[in-house]
Length: 195
Image (tube, rainbow, N blue to C red; front, side, top):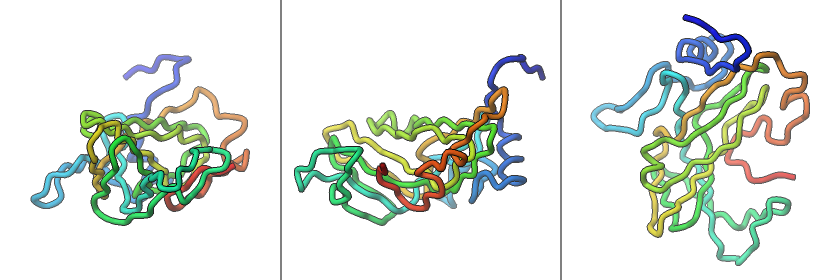
């Protein structure tokens, strides 16, 4: 194996397993890729070659515009969402839902995580969006599922929905998310925009 000096590195499955077990970076943690639960096929989750596929929890906030509100990130109206808990969430056409990961993350200071959607959802017109998980951020990740289709779309709780890719910086940052008292640190449930 060789390492090119001066490049940020993407972390592999053995590193992810080690960090999850030794530093509790991901809890609960699945060391391998899970594709079946008993006789049932599931959208895969767990450790992959160069990432970790997270699961969606059963808590959802489905966007609705019954109040004809303006979407304002500085003054977001929580009444714009309908709370739902279940194994399958139906997202209305051209709308979105918020959810959270089953997994709780504790990001090391030298690591940045980028999240990308899984192809199973992307090929159905369902886009998963998550902002980067910054060094020393901790909590359940809030997920945004956009239904770009003119039809209702399903999201499955307890199954894979997005992949986390871990990057190690060449140097440790001088100021982490925790150092800055980041407003989303320690989030437990589906978290709405904060100012």
